[in-house]
Amino acid sequence: MASTHLTTRQRNLIVMITLSASFLSVLMQFLLITAFPKIMQEFKINSTEVQWLTTGFMLTIAILIPITAYFIDTFKTRTLMLSAMSLFFMGTLIGLIAPSFSILLTGRIIQGMGSGIMIPLMQTILFLIYPKEKRGYAMGLAGMVINVAPAIGPPLSGVFIKYFAWRSLFLITLPIAGLIIVCIILFMRNVTKQRETNVDILSILWSTVGFGCLLYGFTQWQEVGFVHVSTIISLIIGALTLSLFVLRQLRLQTPILEIRVLKVPLFSLVAFISVLGFSLLIATETIIPMYVQNAQQMSAYYGGLIVMPGALTLAVMSLFAGKLFDKYGGKNIAVIGFILLSLSTIGFYLLLGLHTHFMVTVILFMLAMGGVALINMPLMTAGINALPDDLIPHGTSVINTIRQFGGTLGLTFIISFISRAESGARNINSLDYLQGVKDAFFVSFLFAILGFVLSFFVERKN
Image (cartoon, rainbow, N blue to C red; front, side):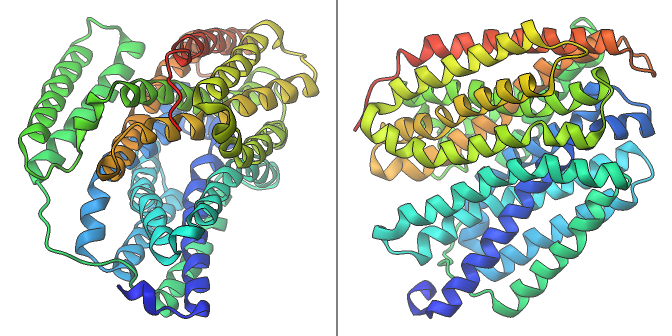
């Protein structure tokens, strides 16, 4: 394999390029959240509509994750990474010049296509260029990239929005993406092994239509009601096509998504709990900046600054979560994590107001992110450990797909309570918006309680 012939300099360059590209991909997902209120004002849209900038991004990633394995087997590393970053660059350019919300959403989806390829590719590259005894270090690097980006994204976004327009977020990202593309062309080497493989186009079509229609139908349910024609048709089409996708995976000799891993009870349980944890992470990080700007009428700068300590807590706590898992097991750590999430979400519900002190929100958010850090990695490790070695790659793909898609549904459901409070008004009323935020956090509290109860059924697997 090409990776065995790499010099130390070549390996370091590959790691630097790969981590930089992945960092930018994750950063852009969180960089735009603080700008949502400004985007809502410019395009005259509500919270549910603007949330599609995140849900569309995440849904695209969820669709592409199972297909990326085929891409890695078929294309060389340099070609695949160049394609991923080119898509990201193109999506960023479209977002920069977007004259309407629909064009902006298109740009985000194209960005999501690049990120959906990049994140699994990063994990594969790091596994291949490091020997087994150093793969823990490699995954530590990957974890830092994924967790540090949410920490610096909101405050960085707040600074830019304070002094410039929201489009500056795309403007500053564009040249960085261009520089990474140049580095890929000059320094990237092939580290993956290509082999003959087939991709089932029908499976991809059904999964795309199924996931997309279900998410759209669920959103329409919150917007216009369950009995609306668009809601019913979308949900029926989504359920039917997703069922066809599942049946086809069970019949294919080489499925694009090996869903048989869900036959393992512990893995299925952990996958569902992970959806709850991921939904709470994305929802909380989305709601707080919007609450600060739309309810408290503070600037985007404060909207970003207020989440920075919590995001840093997430990054730091994630470093220790692995050691805690080895010592205490996934069950105990997850229970503590959901206790912290329950306390923080009910705290948000009871304490948030139009004049709530800055530090109260900061502390509650830190508590929430500490809880998330104790849930995500330990639970995923517990679920993967429950599988035989030959199913581990398939389990990773399945649980990531479930988390992304389930997280988008959970996020859409939680955010819908804010949109209901807005009542479609163009000028947001602070009191109405605050009530929507409190309702959303009460639903989040119920999510956390459900996760807390289910965590007691997680068995310890060494």
